[in-house]
Length: 434
Image 1 (cartoon, helix red, strand yellow):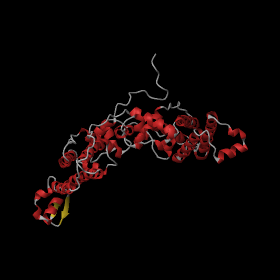
Image 2 (cartoon, one colour):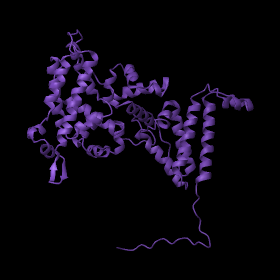
Image 3 (tube, rainbow, N blue to C red):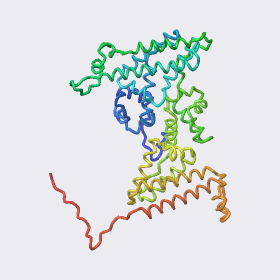
Image 4 (tube, rainbow, N blue to C red):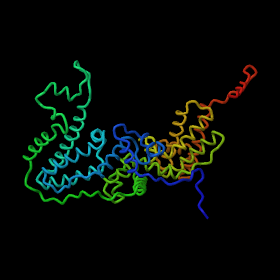
């Protein structure tokens, strides 16, 4: 006997993409005009599908940079400090020149991709062994990287053309007209990068102390955990300690991996939470569609309530952090469609009120020891309200949802107009052949 698909869910192939697949499509698309829709078109998937792997364009840029860095050949970390920094600058220049817009992406990226963290850690350990202090080692790597990126962007910018009193001139030509003694070669190739680097390294040499015994650098990337395991541990942590406890570092400890490997799987912390929300949405069994708007609204909202009650942390993610996964969108669309069918014009307001009440009901149901002033006062007036337990909370939640839905439809719904004697019904338009 074969298992039947869950009601309301369309059977299909499991997701076959990975975060690296999305990152490679972004690199193929090019970093200059990168966008989520363009990458989705290249992959042949819907725009919302990408949000299972990258939660916004910034995260897409980080994923692309991480993949590019992991696939590039970087200098080994066992070189003397001056040779190491020089070789790193040479490699970084080739890396940036390989793709237009890559330097701007590195310059403006909201953080370091995991591949960069692994590489820089190996270089930092080597510089420490060569006699640089911990801070000087980190500053040196950052300084030569900034110098290289800025110079690459600046040299390319010399090709920009401007209108001048002598006609259209490139920025390179304008500089040469002002300082002809510099020579054309000064504004081509790598510009003054080598000269600037020599001055920087000469200054750094005065700060090098005696060699320090440190562990050998480890440049091999650590093992990357599976997405499902990371998401499952994130949910478990959120259930136990709340959403605020969910960080990449905390989840990495639970999975037993280096936290720097997690961005390659889920992106940043928001990406992890979006993946957790999608895991919650995957467990929702949509109720059968109801023809009557009120029944549809009650069925969908109750289904969401039952799922969120098991993962109350999701309320904070949805209502406070403003995050959402794409798998919840079909249920949201059903709510909007039901309000529209009922004649509600202010659909956004109606939906916001409904979700706000539903979120409050979830939080109340997951706090059985609620001793707030409101709860104690109500129990004093009506002793039966002091009854505890999930069944009592569910009864009140179902009653509350019914009252809210009835109130919204009564207040905001516009009944369909009925023809009267003074306003004859419109005749259907006559069809014409063409």
